[in-house]
Every structure is written in structure tokens, then in C-alpha cells.
Image 1: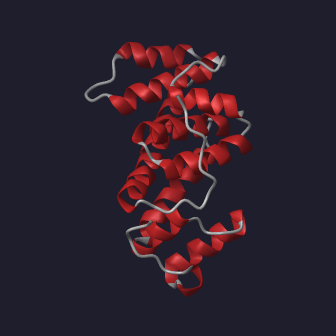
Image 2 (image 1 turned 180 degrees about the vertical axis):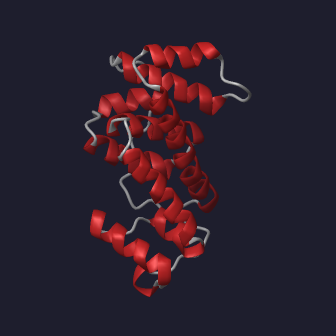
Length: 181
């Protein structure tokens, strides 16, 4: 059960009202995570959605962005983001098996995406400078330096949402994602 208070979308004013209207128009409703964030900081939600917009207009394909978000969310133990990005991942063309493999850190058979997932796992689970060999592997897999920066933005973007949901224990309003081994 969610721990932080939320406003109802129809009671929102100002920037929160504008954000909720845009989200509702785009996906038909305002998910609980967005309600929580904008209830306390509409500017934070606007920043997060702005990052999503940068990623959507960037060079990474949507399936790669979703692979990043699923990887980070699984590692963080954010059931809310795993559930929501399982749905978005499917819409982006990822199969249920691919998403299970991505979440588990197992090869999917797509060498380029597998290199991306390995890189994301390394960046997310270690501290200090990432070894040159990890960056080189990602670049040799076919990603550009711009895509490396976009991947790091995707990591930062989903990490914020993961943290909000883990602190809030945000109530799932998506179907629970299947467990992985």
C-alpha cells in the first residue's frame, strides 16, 4: 500500500493538472507512480517525462530503452517498474522470453542488445570508473557514443522512478510481472 499521499487527478491544479491531462490523453489514465511524484513535485515529474522525451527522440530504439529500464528495475527490486515496463516492453516488440532473459541477465540471442544489457548491469551494480573494456565492448557491438550517453540517461531516469516506488511502496496498477528464476 502506498505510503505517500496523492492528489486525485481531477483535483490537481497548475503544473500537476497540465501533466496529468497530457498523460491521460497519451495513455488513458494517470499511473500511481506519476500521481505520487506530481502530488509532491510536479517539476520532478516534468523533468522525468522530459528525459523520456529525449530518449524517445534519440538514437536508441524503444526496445533497447525498455531493456535498460527492465534491467535496472529488476536489479533494484522495483516491482512497480518491472510490471509497467513489462507492458511497455511488449509494446516495443520484446517477447516475454526476451524480457525474462533481460531481467535475469541471460543472453537473448540478440548480440547487440545483450552487450547493452551487460553494460547496464555493470554500470548499475558497480562503483567507481567503469572499465574501458566494458565501454569498448558496447561500442564494438554497434552502439554509438551518443547511444552510450542515452543509455546512461535511461539508467538515471528509471533509477529515480525505482527509488520513488521503493520508498513509497507504490500500489501496483499494472498486472504483476511474472517472476524470473
